[in-house]
Each structure stands twice: as structure tokens, then as C-alpha cells.
Image 1: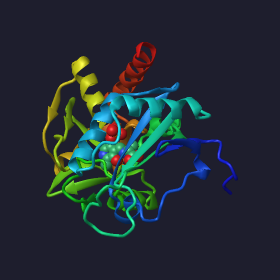
Image 2 (image 1 turned 180 degrees about the vertical axis):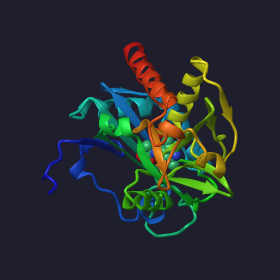
Image 3 (image 1 turned 45 degrees about the vertical axis):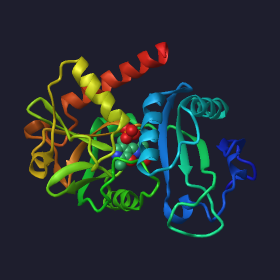
Length: 295
Ligand code: PDD
């Protein structure tokens, strides 16, 4: 049951109010058309991680869907920081969304002079339990049935939602999308492959979301001298991988140890998290702690 008044404060169109009291119009274009952009920002010890990169990607999404950004980065940061400060937990996942607002009618074409809807709310950061991280998770593959602007972080996520649920229904954590024989990304994550100590990452283009975590992983790989190739990864390489990882702001780096029911990797290491995944997870934690300490 939802409590009458939520202890969670959200931001909606200029106001800070209990989440349980927030209301938007049923004519909101986010509701009618999925016409909006969003971001999910991880927060550790009440410090937003890589906020600048998230706001940059928000701008790219807004530009891509021709929705003027209602706020400067400083205004966004001020609002996000206030939401972080009021949340009853220190480690959070802050969700923000901008839609093209609510007109007085339903029309596919953009409305004129309608203010956007801006919404921000915090959730507790749900981290992966150590026992699951130690085993890795299972994934399935599916043909990518999404549009060709997967580089935009838009709220129209139906294909991703159904793909993630199909994975859950099969006892798996993620669906990995394949398009024209290439591995693209997960339903809500980017995917990396390790083969013969080489880290393979698909290129950032219109087919996948340019993940903030993806960039951190590549920066850490460069810093620690891990050989990397950024190029298209075909399905056979995915299936022959030594390691497969999923990455996202909330999952960080999570090894995928079973793919379509088959163990990932070879010999005695098959079906277990690989050494590079464990190392990268360690580097990521170290990096996070440094950033949190020094800002
Ligand atoms: N999803 N690809 C897709 C399709 C995603 O939805 C996400 C993240 C990523 C990883 O991006 P990042 O590293 O910036 O979190 C890749 C978020 C967490 C979500 O929708 O909840």
C-alpha cells in the first residue's frame, strides 16, 4: 500500500513536493507518445557520480528529439543536489525526465508554446549482492527490434522493457540485442567482450546508447594498460568470448557467465566470472572512491 504522504521529495516543474502528491496531466506527451528524454544518475554518499557526463548526454538526447533544454547545467545541478539532500538514503539512483509537456489535444506534431514537464526523483541505489556478483548472471540474446536512434536516451522504452522481461521470465538478468549479426548492447546496459586478454567494445553509433559507465570502463582500461579494440563484434565472437560483461550506472560492471543457456568462457573457467571482470570491478570501486573523496 502507498503511504498517504511519501517521505520522498521529488521535483516537478519548479516545485519540491512529496512524491505521493506529484501530478501530471494525462495529456502529457510523455504519457501519450513517450515523447521525452531521461537520465539515471548514480549517487554515492550523496555525491552524484559523473553528473557532467549525464547532463551532456541529456543535451544530446534533447537535441536529437528537438526539445529545447529547459535548464542550464547549473540549474539542473542545483535541482538534482536538492533532491539528493532530501532523500532518506545516502546511495541513490536519481531519475530525471523532460517531456514535451501537455497540450490541450493529442497531435503527433510538436505543440506550440507548451512548457516541458520536468520531473526528478530519487530511489535507493540497488546494488548487486556480492553472492550474485561472485557467480555472475545469465543473459539471453534477441534480435534488436528497436528504432535506429538508440543513441538517444528517450522514455519510449517498450522494446527494452519487453526484452528485459523476457530475460527475467527465463531466469536471466539481461537480454543482449543482436542486429544484422552484430552484438549491440543490453536491454538496459552496454556489453563488453573479452577474448584472449583483449577487451572488445562496440563503437558508439546510432545503434546503442553511449553509456557513461562504458566511457569509465574504457578510461580505466587505458589507465591500467588493458588492450582495447573498439569495433563491431559479431555474434560468433560473442558466443566464443572468454568473458562477457554488462555495464550500467546502477549495475556497474557485472559479469555475464551464461549466455542462452551455455557457459561463457572455456575449460575450467567456463561459467565463472573472468579475471578481467574482477579486476575492472576493483578499479571501478577504487576510481569511485577517489572521485568521491576529491570531487
Ligand atoms: N540504463 N544501454 C541502455 C539501453 C541503457 O538503458 C543503459 C542504462 C545503458 C548504460 O548506460 P549508463 O552506463 O550511462 O547507465 C546502456 C539506465 C540505467 C536505465 O534505463 O535505468
